[in-house]
Image (cartoon, rainbow, N blue to C red; front, side, top):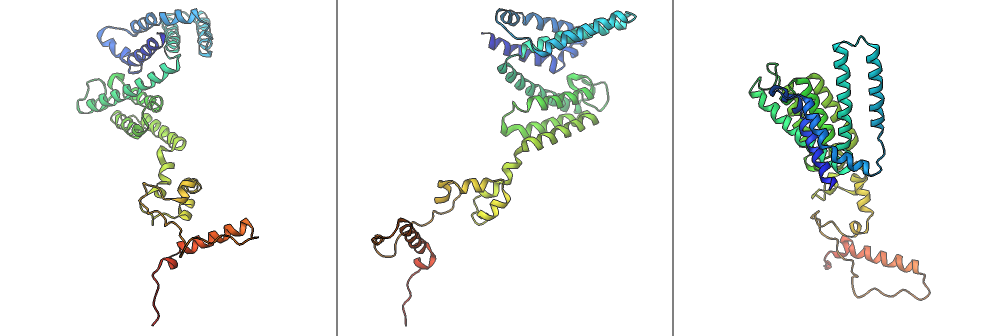
Length: 311
């Protein structure tokens, strides 16, 4: 029962914080601390379930504790004015938010659901940026630059790049190129140079690592319907081993692929009568060689041509 509840927490965390709705809601008088407190209250059942079982402490939790300790020590050595107090408060809230995110996304299934929610949130941000391109100053304070719920064009572009990184694996393979193109369409209205550069770097990394189907496209001519456009020697030199692996299999070497449209090779038959049995005393190797020679002779065009009459 705790598994579906944790998935719900992951979706709620993405909807509130990844979309920047928690900061956008300040226009309505609701500060982000309220949403953090709401998530903390909803995480209580998961915390109780974790305390009942033996759950190892993650390295992120240790890092958060040391970060808070260093922040408090720095505060006591500071003038302890209003600015220092606000800085300590921000760091404490950041660590609390980090721990709550660790609780919400601590399960592998919750991480998969969270990635899918991030992909949908990224598409929502793209739609809002496109809408603001034709309706300026709806969200952004900068004329001519879209921002969406992020309220800042540079932050909006950074959020879309982060959504591309985190949500790419959750998108089906046939829609990944469209997902990448959609993030580019959402980043362009922000006119953020850093966001466009970051998008280019991410796409270059994905291209070098996953190929975006380039490896499959290299071997495409070997599986085309045109049998004359591809030969074993040509495809073995151009494709990435696709032709060699297919040609080495018994099914592909004996008959053509049903989807290739190429006719099946003729069945070797003797010219007249059944093949003669091997002579007594001959070895099995010589018998196989003789049978192979007869099969090649039957399959050659000369043997299948019509006989000519002498004048």
